Length: 154
Image (cartoon, rainbow, N blue to C red; front, side, top):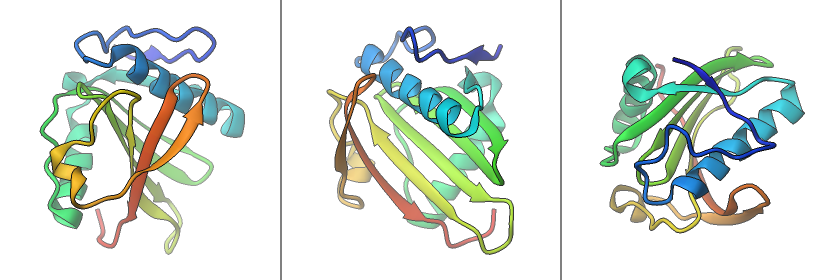
């Protein structure tokens, strides 16, 4: 069941099992606001067990590109196309959010982004491989983020 993410009223529905559920909900709402404001796209999510193909695609890229295996349980996922980009998101129980951006046009941008919800520790599987910059968000508090450029073809 797909659920539209609202950013005018943050809800932790679907994320209740996370120890940082409200911060993760704020991070999810922050992404929804970004896509609505920049692309007029309505951001929606599906329970991860109903979006296994999206989760598996993201996990394959992480494993093959950087030998990263996310330990936390995926809660929600989504994929969509907007402005010549294919986007995929997975939101995890730990408070981690991972997105994969892939330009439809050959030679375009391809990257994986990590965002850590306010209050969560850097996951062990990412701690030694990435450094995280901080940004403030009215919806999500302090977000720590990092990324890498995708080299392979997926």
